[in-house]
Image 1 (cartoon, rainbow, N blue to C red):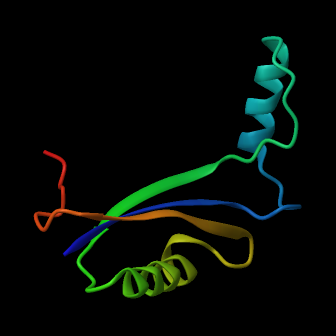
Image 2 (cartoon, rainbow, N blue to C red; image 1 turned 180 degrees about the vertical axis):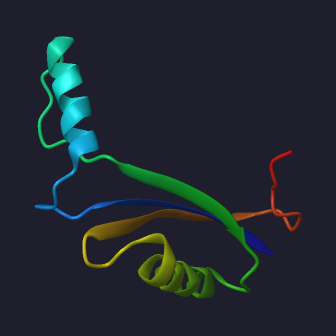
Image 3 (cartoon, one colour; image 1 turned 60 degrees about the vertical axis):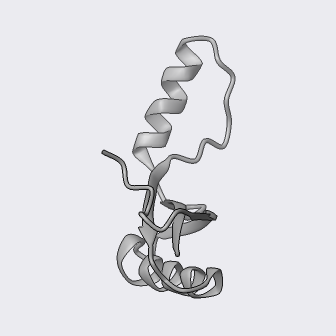
Length: 91
């Protein structure tokens, strides 16, 4: 059994994010009124853990040690979806 995991990593509130600030300013110049823009990284991967609980534990561990810098970044596991045994790998 395989699971598709989707997650997002972004700067914690209060941490300077020049990329988000530049995008927000660009939107303002184009006439879009945005505030509190959060800009980050999106990631997805296929896990072959035996259960959804194990997949969530794996994702938490990976995010906390590799994908995110816990000093200045936060992460959110967006979804864990059961997929076919072939992993639903993209060609």
